[in-house]
Length: 122
Image (tube, rainbow, N blue to C red; front, top):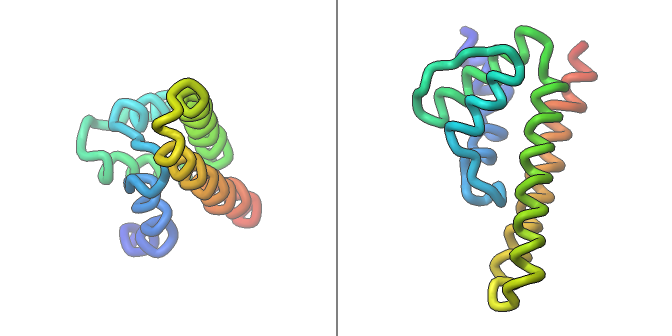
């Protein structure tokens, strides 16, 4: 039952974060680092399974706001990296402008799914 409830609530969001269309690649180490920052010790498994477990635990422990903050910090870090490349390597502007747009859309999704929904769930 918990898995189907999870799928209804987070599956699109999770797939967006795991997809290149998010504007950034979140690797397993980054997911585990975020989990550790929240006080969770998660096993080293696939990105999808680890992210699922992180979402479930964050929801159960009422830590979605902190999770959203950590994800937004990671997104901001990527944005700064992309902007630096954009400014220094003119031939990458087309690719990076697209990634920056995708990153902005992902940022808005994180805010909607974890931050705003968390406030309305409490």
